[in-house]
Length: 108
Length: 116
Image (cartoon, rainbow over all chains, first blue to last red; front, top):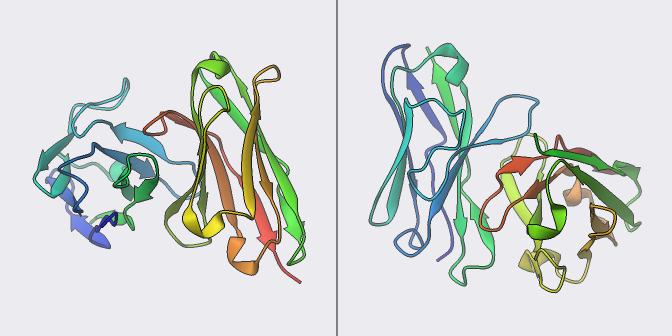
C-alpha cells in the first residue's frame, strides 16, 4: 500500500514535546519527508530523508524512523510551531509521491 | 534564494482548459526535477505530477492521467501544467516546487476555481 496515515490533530502546551507520527507500509523502503504549513502560506520543508534538517530549521525539530512509522518531534514547542504538518514519501514504485492527510498541531 | 512564481490561475467553467506556468529563478533550473502539488480548500496536499530535469520523463497521479500534462521549457526557466476537461473537484491552490524526491522549495501557489 502507498498510503500514509497521520493523526488529524496533536495538542501540547508551550515548552512541552510534540510528536507527530506517520505510518505506511512503504516507509521501511522509502525515505520520509516532513513539511510545515501555516495558514495562507506555502508548505516549508522541515525534515528530509527521515531525519535530516534543512538549513535554517531549528534543532528542536527532528525526525526519526522505525519500521513502518516515522515520527516528527518538536521539543520545547513554541507558539510559532502551531501549523499543519504533512509527511510525504514515494510510492511503491519510487516514482509517484504520496502525502499523509496532515496533522494540525495546536499549542495550548 | 530560489524563487518560484506561479501564474495562470483563475475561475474557469467545468469542461474548459487552463494552463498554469511557474517561472523559476536564482537556481539552475535545467538541473532539477520539478513537480506540481495541489491543495483543495480546507484539505490536505495532493501530488499532481512530476517531470525530470530534461523533460524526458513525466509522472502523473493515476486519477489525472489523460487530463493533465506537465512540461517545461528549460530555455525560459519555466514549468507548465496544462489542465483540460476541468471538473469542480479540480478546484484548488496549485503549487510548483523544485526537487527530485521531495520539494525543497515551493512557490506561493496559483488558485484555480472550477465553477459554473
